[in-house]
Length: 285
Image 1 (cartoon, rainbow, N blue to C red):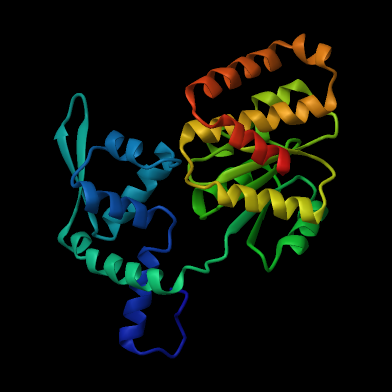
Image 2 (cartoon, rainbow, N blue to C red; image 1 turned 180 degrees about the horizontal axis):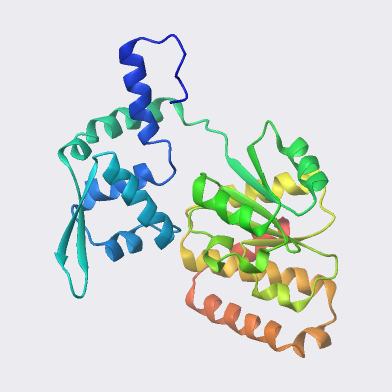
């Protein structure tokens, strides 16, 4: 344990051991889902928790079983069907959640948003970190693998990704624009049309300055929790605005990727009631 050798009372050591169970990003999420919904199969759990992978869920369930909080029951051997449910100890964690909820309501209103900076150049992420420290909790990643691992393990509000990040092509599309975090993509001053295929909530041209970076991050924080259709429309409109500022109309209209995106935007605008408000937000940013 991290507190070994520290002069602590027995009750405090026990409390730290209990908190260690919740220190993993996904442990409390799985416990909370099983608390709210009761026993579930593996696929039910997987579908109920956005952004978790099958491998991470398997590892998480195994650790919770080892801790005596979750029980796995085989319902059928062929095809294999299993059920996961809370043990008595797991059920009694409800009191812990209630206590943390009360504490959070009293003290977390001013929680600092977390930002993940992903760029292959450590000098760039260090410069961005110096800009943003104090406003946000800043984490850095320098490869696609580091990016994916950090998103799996830590709570992130906004991700700022360089389109040329090494290994970015190997990162799952769902991780580039997750349901719980927002993604800002940084591109070259004259980006290729392949950028249109990279999922993101906003796209900005490099070089980016401190004021622009903070403004873009704050805009994404303000838009957290918006309906998925509006989020998708705003993201597509952001890409359209950027490409309209770079390329001539004739070049854009001759590109199949761009034309398909415009058709998608028009379809969403027809379905939603206030698309102009989203476009006004993008243009102001």
